[in-house]
Amino acid sequence: MIKSLKLITFLIFMALGSCQDKKAVENRSKEMVRVLASPAGNNSMQPYLYSDSDQVIMSWTQKINDSVHVLKYATLSEGQWTQARQIQQGSDWFVNWADFPAIAQNKDQLLVHYLKKSDTATFAYDVQLKQSSDLGESWSDDFKLHQDSTLTEHGFVTILPDKEDGFFITWLDGRNTKGGGHGDEHQSMGAMNIRTATVLANGEIMDDVMVDSKTCDCCQTSAAITTKGPVIVYRDRSDDEVRDIYISRQVGKRWTTPKAIYNDHWKINGCPVNGPKADAYENTLVVAWFTAADNIPEVKLSFSTDDGENMMPPITIAHKKTIGRVDVALIDRENALVSWMQSTDKGAEIKMMKVNIDGSKSAPFIVGEISAARASGFPQFELIDGEIVFAWNTINNNRRSIKTVRFPLEVLN
Image 1 (tube, rainbow, N blue to C red):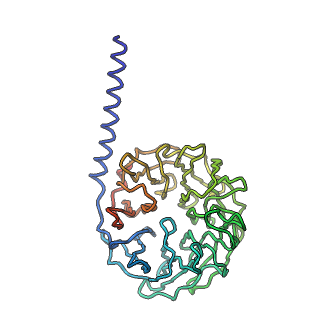
Image 2: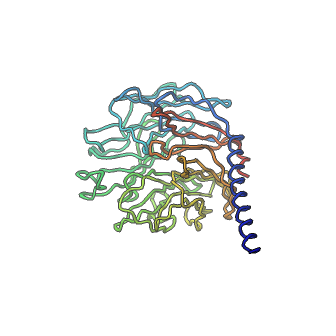
Image 3: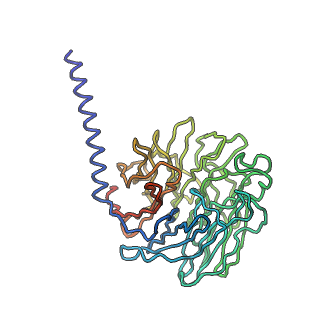
């Protein structure tokens, strides 16, 4: 009887301690996270953050009416967002919760993309680019990234500064799927492939190469520039419908044969719409991703110390209730930041953790609450001047907007 009472007392103590710990985490989040007045107006969605370590740029789309969307951007300067500036608008765009425009900067050059319908078919659209050589004071006419003229899907673009004043781009390309349908993942014809190219300052597109002829249809791509050149990471698709995260590296002028970051063996007969994220710091590469192999949802992270040639065994970041939708960034050669979405009784939370290359991890930090719906999209973050800047979609009574916050890196120590 005494032993039973002791056991009950211990379990109550542990439960109270767990509740107190969770409350402490929530209180710490509320104390440290500061809201940044968003430059995006009502009906704005799809934030994308880019940082060159000196500043943060955010691009997004805004719905004007049932048919017209605009692409805008703003820069974080002295702790505040500048006034929103419009880049382009159109009534023939493909606007999707998972496939959003990106922006990147290389010196005075800016490059953005958006998706433009090429046909009345639902999944027929092209990747359109616009360039600025004067930091957004003026913009070029739009031009198409890919050189095919098929009325198929093209999207899930990653843009990074590369070369002297150009940009490295990777994207998913559906030119080989002509005649197939999105719902059946183009099984009637060919598969989606992943391609890379370089866009020069004068708008010339060079080195358009197909790296993998069969990929998952609608997971975001990611890339990083290491000391030895670009690497791309993406969700592959095998003939047996295994959809693990793969990597390919550019060595000289050739791309290496794609290989798995780790063999999760996630077999799924459809695209999970949950792509990986990568970042590089000198010769260190980090990749974060979501998997649900054996019906166990997990977020994992893997380091490499040789520019991605060899990836270390993965570190499990979150499991069970995780939704994925990850982002990642390297602080230095041994420490990374990773964020993900986690389901709760009320919806979902954005969580973040600091991870060391030796596998040690900080306590999870709650960045904020978010809807678990698809429309909440993919939260983005960047690290600048010892602070973390976040942006994500918010949905309140069917009103959509973008929330931006900031908090010090030290909260993750």
